[in-house]
Amino acid sequence: MKKFLCSLILLLSISSITFAAKNDSANKDSSKAEEPAKEKKEIKPLWFNLSFNEGVSFAQITRIETMETRSNFVRENFLIGAFVNCKTDNLWFLDLELQLSAYYPFKTTFNGMQQFPKNPINYAFDLFFGAVYSFDDFKYILIDTSLGLHYMYQLTDEYHMNYVGLGFQGTLEFPISKRWTIVNNYFISYDNANLGSNKKVQLFDASYQYHIELGIRYSKRVQNQYTYIK
Image (cartoon, rainbow, N blue to C red; front, side):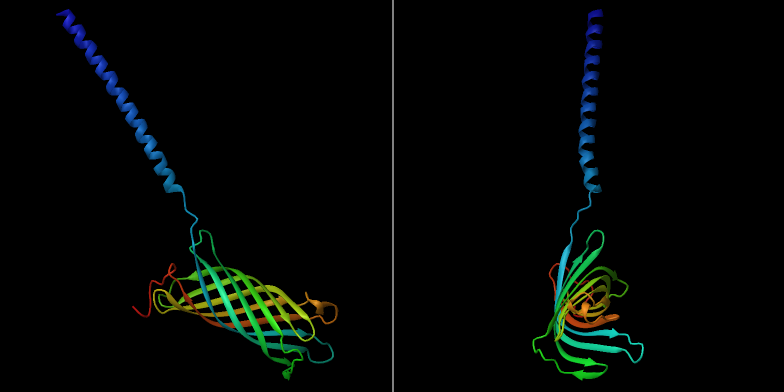
């Protein structure tokens, strides 16, 4: 009888030890399985899309020389051209846009009087890089605003003009369908126009310009949620 009780106690103790060891190993495995799951939830992927739009652009450049004894000298250039815009979508900190435009001047005035250029191949290149803030309050009209750096190179009859300044752009987007969108840009900038070859001969006291653009965007990745055509 004593031998039977001793053997029974020994078997119970061995079984309890093995059961505890299995529980410890199971707990360790479950904790190891939960740790990577928690880590995956905390990681935020830095993934975003790019959308492109292009179209036609109209620009007006104004340069002013202030005069003390008479009215100011005001020179204006009217240009027409094309633009290409690249904008990020769903960037993790702030959306950005880069826009490149090319222009040809079709009219030039001095104090309101039209001037006829001597060089028929004058042209201009424009670059704008800014941070974008979007308004999602309206479903069928998308509004974007961007503030950033502006640069333009312009070849005139007299000088190689270089403009550097601050630009602001407002954009209205009209979602025609899931992938097609009409884009309307309104741009204005205030620049320093004394960076080219004119700075030693003719200094300008103020320079500003504005652009009006009409374009279109087709995108498979960045699609419209609300559209005019269902």
